[in-house]
Image 1 (cartoon, one colour):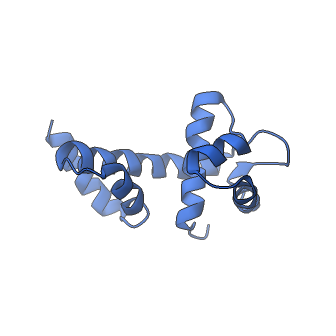
Image 2 (spheres, rainbow, N blue to C red):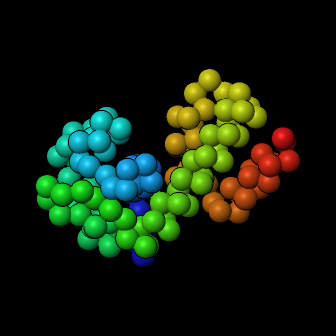
Amino acid sequence: MEKLSRSQEDYLEEIYVQVLKNGFAKVTDISEALKVKKASVTSALIQLSSKNLINYSPYSSVTMTVEGEKIAKKILKKHRVLSKFFGEILKLDNAAEIACAVEHLISDKNLDKINKFVANSK
C-alpha cells in the first residue's frame, strides 16, 4: 500500500471515529468535523475507496474496510498518545493542533518511546 497523504490520514481517522460512534460516517458529518467543503470530502472518499480503505458510494453511508480500519486504528493511537504527551505531560496550550501535525511525521519507533514515557509518567 502506498503511503497516504496527511489529508487522507485525517479523513480516514475522522471516518473511523464516526464509525466507532455511529456505525457509519456521512459526508455532512465529515465535512463539519474537518471544517471542509462537502465536495472535498467526496473527493477524498473516492480516493480512499479506490485504495480499498473504505466502502463508499454516492448518497450512502461510509464504512471501513478491514485494511482501512487497521490503518485508522494506528493513526488514532498516534493521535491519542501524542495528545496526551503534549497536553497532559508538557501542558502545551495548542497540544491537539501539535499532535495532529506530528502524528503524520513520527515513526513507529519514536511513538513507542513517547508511549512508554507517557505510561511511566502516571
